[in-house]
Image (cartoon, rainbow, N blue to C red; front, side, top):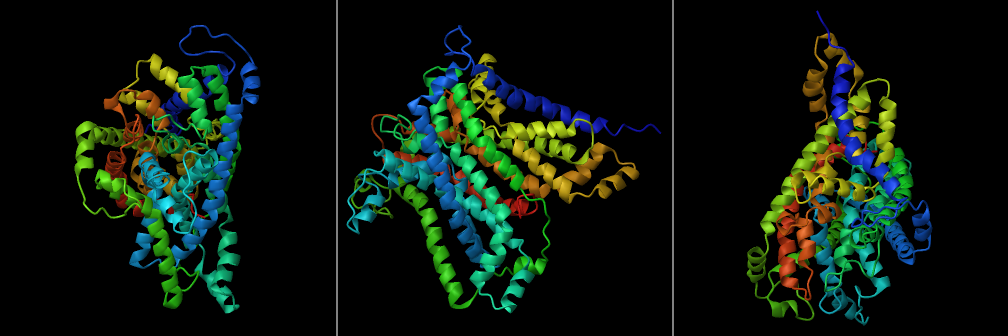
Length: 581
């Protein structure tokens, strides 16, 4: 009987993925390094070699130094706020597991993380509005004068920190919850027998065991905060739509030099500096992902014990979580409320939460004057195709890299991890030039090319198959005559449903909330994604709060619906993957 060589399947399965990875990740990164040594402005054919002149100019550029300073302040402030707040909320929600309202608490806290970035920023922009926003009305009750939140550089920085923290807390709470569920109940029981209080048990048992999780969440939050763009574009833009003038951030500064000032070489050099700031944090994130399996019984999972669930303590916990849930949802409530207000009520002071005379005029006007449903459809198609590509490539590559001991596998995985530390915005310029030269602007292939593969997805699947799929199971199937493709499709894939489900949610929302790449690739109004369409919808010489709120409120529906359907699968997927302890 003729047998197929064992190496044939992994080679044939991995080659297309590596080819795709090389074209849309490795080559653009190398091209970014090369372009940083040239002086080029896109519209000129001349591309003189200037060596390190861009580097020298960068070191003395006050705007770039300001962008680094602002971004660093935002990133570390968001981490400082997110970690303690998220850990405290996770501990409180963990005590309510098994009760129906625990799902409400989880959803209320996590929803800001998955809603579209632009509608969320629009909601907070109205809250911070100096003339009409409810924040000035609130501080006025205690005698504090009204502040020009978005027209003062320092206060604008504070507003961005608040917005980014509000969005980051939900993901951190979810990861901490999964970690807390994996703390053995026996440890709490032993602490109680020794006379320890609930808080002491949490402090001396749960917190030390969660240190790897805290490191992972800290690094991921820091990375995402360093890459903020849409928030600054919307929140810090003036009424003429000039983006981020008061608060310069790294990504905005890089794109402005490359696409507005046409200084590609200089912009690529700024990209390299951005990558250098992120590289160290990404490496720490990879080291922080735990590899241990849960040792909890089903009884322990269903009866978490940090503090008491019932009695007076339980009522206090419910009250605290209820207030926090309301605070997390309040910006979105204001946004939806404004969508149904009449113009006079929108200008009323102090602002109202519930419209006195609800109207559909804002929604009808938006649907009549903008292709909003087309934008939603574009985003839905984009996110679905991107998710399918990322899940399939991650499943194949992660399985091969985790279960086959072939020459070159460690090198390939090392390259994937090394390039994973480079944010997409860094190599976006060469990728854009390739898409432009291929005539793919305003096309689906041009939009998808930046979101077809995810380094973290490959890493996640590899860690799962290495720790959770025994080699003996695969060898038994081979002994029974099963081929490698059959093993992958009939044995491995069903076992990977959990982590692949979590990865699908992450990939979907990554594409759904994508902003910078669709902004430069899709320049036709009919081809806009939802994020781009809403962001550019606010430009002009006046800001119509009612129509903006109506458009943003309609944009919330798809992401909120998808989240409600996939929340449990996402939690289960994270719990069964390498992100859990």
